[in-house]
Amino acid sequence: MRLDALKEAPYAFGSTYEREVEFDDATWRRRVVDRVPFIAEVDGVVAGTASGGDGEVNGAAAMTAMWVDPRYRRLGVGELLVKAVLEWAKGMGYGRMFLWVTDVNAAAEHLYARHGFVGTGASQEVRPGELEHEMSRTL
Ligand SMILES: CC(C)(COP(=O)(O)OP(=O)(O)OC[C@H]1O[C@@H](n2cnc3c(N)ncnc32)[C@H](O)[C@@H]1OP(=O)(O)O)[C@@H](O)C(=O)NCCC(=O)NCCS
Image 1 (cartoon, rainbow, N blue to C red):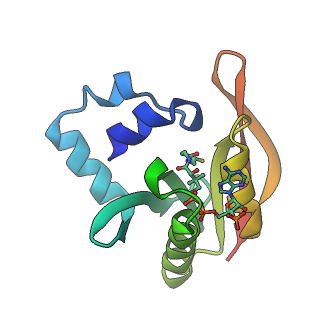
Image 2 (tube, rainbow, N blue to C red; image 1 turned 90 degrees about the vertical axis):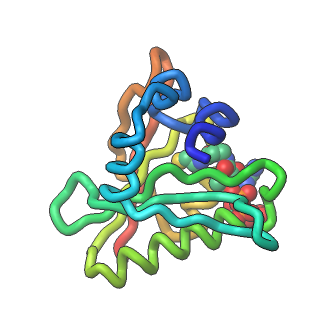
């Protein structure tokens, strides 16, 4: 799924398909241990994913790797995934959640803004000439 996401929406992620397709099994296993992946299914078919994990700041969580299969977009799947990661983080006792969104990704930014995320003002270059900016909200 992660490789499908990187291939389908390269503009949305800091990483690339070319980088992650080289990962070995141990690396994939470590990723699902280091982060908590959520999978959305529609009628038993995998439709999207998002992950929660530790943020860079102490006591804060991070939402990463959000992707909805294009066949299931605009049906509320992304919204469910955001809610699931927020609920998980609240339950784990985190006080704030951070995420990064690329400047060209208006769809994701709308989704996050709908759920109370606002820009922190931090930004960084994700690819030459392309920025991503940080958003956060309290939990
Ligand atoms: C961004 C993404 C996860 C949204 O998933 P989704 O399942 O289509 O989102 P939802 O149906 O839950 O939409 C919820 C709200 O998000 C916003 N939204 C979603 N897609 C949008 C779009 N193309 N344009 C504008 N707003 C959009 C809207 O506010 C929408 O509510 P509405 O449909 O009532 O207007 C999906 O488009 C995707 O996977 N994109 C490629 C990967 C990506 O961008 N990942 C995020 C990395 S930070």
